[in-house]
Amino acid sequence: MIDNFMAAIMRGHLVVEGMTDKGRWRLASDNLKHAIDSIPDPERRTVMQAFHNALLQTPIVRKDSRLGEMKLYINVDDALPRKLNTVVMRKPLMKVHTYTNTSIAAKYAAVLECSSPEGNRILRGMEPVRHDDWQAARDKENGKAVLRSIKKFILEELRSRVRRELGDEITIKGSTPFYRPNCRLTATPTATGSVPPTVREANANPPPCRDARPIPNRSPTPAANP
Image (cartoon, rainbow, N blue to C red; front, side, top):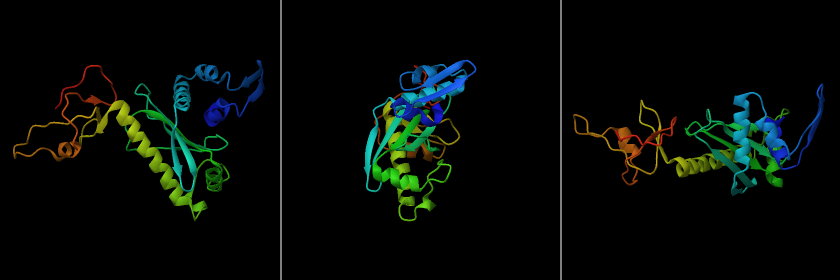
């Protein structure tokens, strides 16, 4: 219930009540956080807390010619057990699908919302009976362009937020990805006098710096440049 309707409950659009052998229970905006913090399974509790924290962030807003206003809520948290990806939803604030971004190595939880009248109409028409996906083939006129726009918005803003909070991401072939705060990698030339191409490509134009941190462990002591 919380997984699929968290945003709707959080904003007071939905109140859920039920009965168990222990009595009646109620889930609403005023006790949602307590309910999440009380989830007995630690992994599920961490996941729900991460998306709840995402929805507490100030959203990034973008206007699209077809969908109208889109909002993206991002919670970048290196303490998460893994990358939790982006939940997408429209006006009913029910989880429709989860989009992954393989090019983002940081750990995050994000929520994309499209609640505008035009966006809600188009996206509703792109959903199958189960309401668990947005399928371009269901809207020949808008489908492909709409999904392209949504995925571009998510990817661009995730990259921007991760860069701002963790630094730039650099992946050297055969090694662990690194985040470094706007620094330049240095490398000892090979026997032929050339610098490895992966390092050349990583050095766009940022100023030199001394620290580079592996993604899995945000150690307070910077690692030395190779």
